[in-house]
Image 1: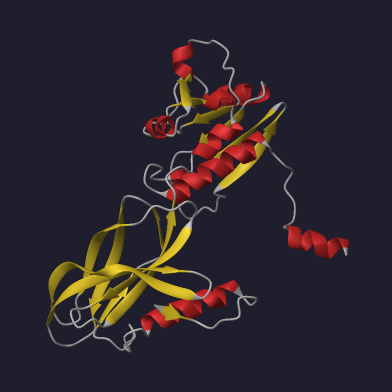
Image 2: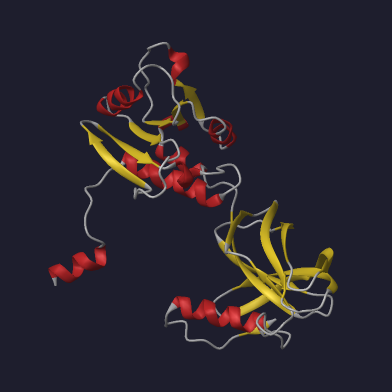
Length: 288
C-alpha cells in the first residue's frame, strides 16, 4: 500500500499526478529509464466483467529482450493507492531491438456502485514498473437513468440497431416507429439512426419534435474530416427539441460506459432543453 501525504484542498489534477508518480516509483524504476515501456491512453470499462485494454509495449534497447509481462490493479482514494490482488502474468514476449508490440489485454475489473478510478500497473519479469494506465470503472446500470426520465421506460427508435438490444437489456420498452404504420407515438423520447427509412427523415424528425417528442438524431459519419463540426447541438421545434449528434459520441454503446453516459446526457438535454449561454463561471464574473 502506498500512502501519499497530499493537500486535498489543492488542484485535483495535481493530486492525480502525485498518485501516478508514486505508482511509477513504487519499485524504484520509472518507465522513462526502463528498457521496456508501456503506452496506453486512459480507459473506461464496466465493473464486474472483462475489459480489454489496448497497450503498446516498447523495447527502447538496442538489444533483443525476452520477458514475461505482468499487470496489477491499484485502486486509489484521496490519499491512498492500494493494490487489488497480486501481479498477474498475461504474456511472454520476445522483443527485437527497438521493437514496439501492440497488445490487447483482458482484465477483470471489480463491481462498483459509482464511477471509480483504478490504475493498472504494468511490470516485467523482474517486477520493474514499466508503465501505468489510468482506468475509470463504471457500474453496469448506467442506462437505468433513462427509465427515471421516461414514463413507463418507453423509447421510440428508427434504425438504431444494435442500440435497440442494449436499450432493451437496460429494461426499457423499445418501440420501432416503422412498425406502428403511422399510428401516433405516445412516448417522450425517440432515437433516430443515420440511415432511418420512411421517406424524408428530416421532415419526420421535425414532425416528431413539433408534436412534443424529444429526438436524438444520430448522423452518418462525416465524409470530410477537415470540416469542423460540433459533436452535438440542439434545435428547438415548437413543443419539442432535436439533439443532432455525431456517431462517434455514441460509438460502441454496449461496451463503452462513456457512450452510455453520453446517451443519458443527450436524452436529458433533449427532454429538458435550455438556451445556450456562456459557462457558469463566466456568467458569475459578468454579474459580479
